[in-house]
Length: 290
Image (cartoon, rainbow, N blue to C red; front, side, top):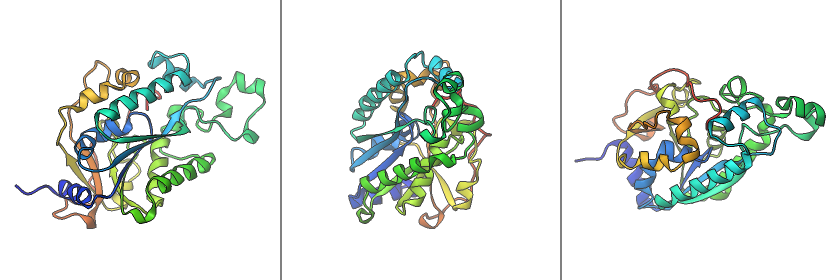
């Protein structure tokens, strides 16, 4: 039986022997959204998962950050992120893919440039004044990248350049940004600007309750394709992220759904209509979980 267009595309990429770089905003996003494809591709090609935002910061924490720490039953953000990095290494080793932890600070903890911060006493009383994204719901999850994040955007672009030189002919998998988390949108923006060949992945589990709210898929004439191979193992892989799984999936039920990837319309055959939207409304996620 002939392959579907997505499988044919992936087989063509794998057959060419070029590297595949998966840009994961946080320490679980690649497996949440691409775990089944990674398990299949990792046995056939050089695949590297590059996780960008792998560090927290010391206190004082914002109210949103404190709520996130309570959800994950942690008191110290830096210790939590050390645990998350170890979880990520263990899970990706099971998939036989390489990994890079880039070391940028997670949006929940990212602070303004020193020249823009308040005094030490005021910062302790109201930490929100010193943060790029003072709150989760009103700032970090609104689908907009702060003007103070230009340096972060540049650093992500430099990471893509370092991992996948322009002449390598490789492929980048980047988040679509479903759900509006600024870190996801920032990584998508850096990938788009890189000039590399890009396939976007729909952000799971946020795509179960949110659409492509900012119209990126439609304006870029991207076609959604489902990947349903090797899904049986995915729930087990996700549970390997013990610090996050309970908050992301209350009750412990991880839905078995196909992964969704978006390719340029011109690069596919027998395409479904361009701009096909993903089901649902704007994501309603647990405060701060990423």
